[in-house]
Amino acid sequence: MHATLPTSVPLRSTAPVETSVSVRDLKIAYGSLTVLDKLSIDVAKGEFLVLLGPSGCGKSTLLNAIAGLMDITDGEVWISGRNVTWAEPKDRGIGMVFQSYALYPRMTVAENMSFGLRIARLPKAEIAARVDRAAKLLHLTPLLKRRPAELSGGQRQRVAIGRALVRAVDVFLFDEPLSNLDAQLRSELRIEIKKLHQSLGNTMVYVTHDQIEAMTLADRIAVMKGGVVQQLAPPQEIYSRPANRFVAGFLGSPAMTFLSGTLRGRAIDLGGGVTVPLDGYAFASPERLTGAAELGVRPEHVALVAPGAPPPSPGAHRATGTVTMIEPTGADMTLWTDIAGQPLTIRAPADLSVAVGDPVRFSLDLTRASLFDAETGARL
Image 1 (cartoon, rainbow, N blue to C red):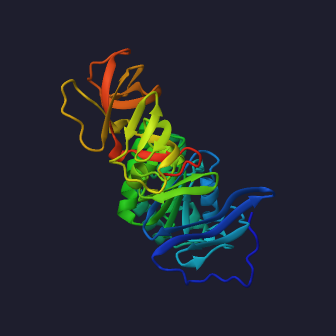
Image 2: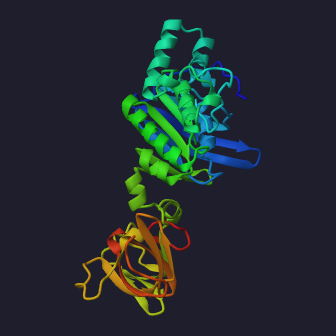
Image 3: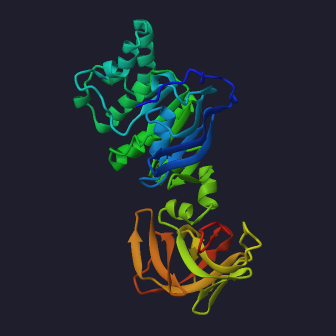
C-alpha cells in the first residue's frame, strides 16, 4: 500500500550522480513500535552493498522501503538522482528478486522473463533481445521453452533473476534470494550472482543473514541490529576491526572467542593469575585503559606451539590448556581448550594428531585481536 504522491514533491534530479541509492533519515514505525529510526545510508553507483543481520533486525524492511513496497513514516529515498520517496515501485527504476521464485507455472521460462515487458507493451523485437541477453548471462538459453515444473530450484531462481534483469534498470534489489536452496546450489548461484555483477556493473543491494554470502559478494557490508546499522565497511575491515562486540560475534565461523577480564593499563587480567599484555594491540580508545573488558580472539589467530619453539614474537602471548572437544570440519579442525578457566577455540590442521584430554601450548596473536568494553560492547 502506498501513500498518494503529494503534488508539491516532484521527482527531482539534484542528488550527486555518483550516488545510486540514498536513504536519508528514514523512519518506519507502526504505532508505538519503531522498526527503523533516522537511518541514513548511501550506495555508490555500481556498488554491491549487502545488508546483513539476524532475523528481525530491519534489513528486509529497509530493502522494501527502497523498493517502495511499504509506507515510510519520515525521511527520503533517492534512486539514480531522483527523490522517489512517494513514487510507485514501477516508477523507481529498480529490478527486484525475492526469496520466493513466484513464477507462473503455465508459462515457459521465456514467457516468465518477458511478462513485465509484454504488459508494458514494449516492441516484440526489443523484448526478444532483452530476454536473449539475460538468458545468455544466466545460462538459461537451453531452458527458454521449459516450464517451472521442469526446472531445478537453482534454475528457477535464475529465471527470477532474469525476470528482473530484462527490465534494464540501474539498481537491483535482492531479498534473501538463496534462502530456499540447498547448500550446494547456494554456493553455485552465489558465484553466478558475483559474476553477474562483475559483468553488468549495476548497483546491487542484497539482503541476507548468511555471513558467507555477505563476505563473498559485498563491496561493503552494512551489519544491522535492532534497526540500526552497527557498522558499514568493506568485508575485510568488518572482519578484522569489528566496531563492537555484536559485529565481532556475528561474523566468523568458527565464532570469535570472548575472554572476560579487567583492563590494567596495556594488559588485561583474565583472572586465575593470568595477565595478557596488550603491547601489540592497536587501541581504538587509548584513553580507556581501565575497567571491565572482553578480549576477542578469532580461532585462526591462535597458533599451536610445538615443544622447543623459539620465543614468541612481539605482540604474541603464550599459554597452556587442555583439549576439551574436537570438531573436524574437513579442511581443518576446531579445538576447544581453555585459558584462565575460560573457553578458547583454536583452528588447527585437519591432520593434527590430538585427542580430548591432551595438553596443548598455544600463542595468541594480539596484533589481530579485538578489545571491547564489557558494558557497552564498543571497540576499545
